[in-house]
Amino acid sequence: MLDYAEHDLLAQVAAMYYLEEMTQDAIAAQLGVSRIKVYRLLKQAREEQVIQFTINWPVQRAPEVEAQLCSVFNLREALVLRPSSPDRSHALARVGQLGARYLEQTLHDGMVMTVCLGRSTYEVIHAVRPGFQGHVDVVQAVGSLALATPELDSASLARELAAKLGGKAHYLTAPMVVDSIEAAEMLRSQRDIHRVLTMARHADVALLGVGNLDPATSEFTKGGYLSAEELAQIRAAGGIGDMSGQIFTLDGTPYTGGFNERVIGLRLDDLRAIPTVMAIAIGEAKIDAIVGALRTGVIDVFCTDLDTARGTLQRAGVTEANFSLPHNSSNIQTSMSTSDGTL
Image (cartoon, rainbow, N blue to C red; front, side):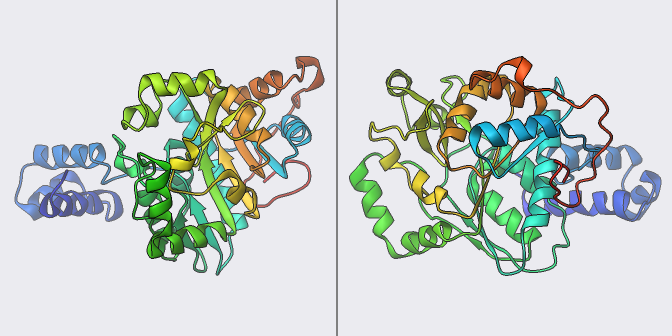
């Protein structure tokens, strides 16, 4: 963790190099250090994420597959990026940009947005461009988790997005999961937590990811909220994935084993009542969880890549012969929504 002086120096050097377009020699002379020192500071600034780069790739979409997803899962809109990338982090960043452009067209001054945690929501929020004309408040949809990467927590994401949208962040000052249903009920009854949850329930737009219950990657087990044995029991009882910490089955029904009631955050019914719920997810490992999530009836807009979309349709029983791709698809600009699948 950088202290203030270190962070300030890295930011100063980065601004001189990237914004003021000074050479490393000129920066070294102004700061009274060597050129190699400037190089190392710039490298550290990238490693510490003081500098973050966003590359705006040209967007190609698969409207036939989008239409099939909407038909099969009763979605308002599907956003499918093509082609897929074999590098998952690269693919997720590009899908995040696609989701961000949709949000920028959807949000208006005075709206309220609620966000969940995770890498997928981070990529969307990171890709939202500054300069929004208006003020949108952002509310945590769930309490906080002890994540290895703190910037993926819902509190950090709410803060970053609110800053970009000219609004205020509203925090749930509670853990995401507590030890008992009684403890969860007590926390939900506290005035400030009740106020923020009520605000989240009345949001205009929700942004969330879809988690699978893989023991090797689940934040529930890594954070100590579920033991490996407890997670195995949930999976044996049909639990397949989660949204907003709420576990569901492959057919889209909520898991009834008691875990969901221990979560401080929005329930699936709460999310279902929000006018626009956008979910982001990619990857073969998540396909079963995605199918279950889409069957909950919570999601209005689903953003993914081509391989995941095709796998999701196949898992839902749509055969390869029943959906196709356009043979000649040009770059589609992400500026406005139209009926032919462009954005």
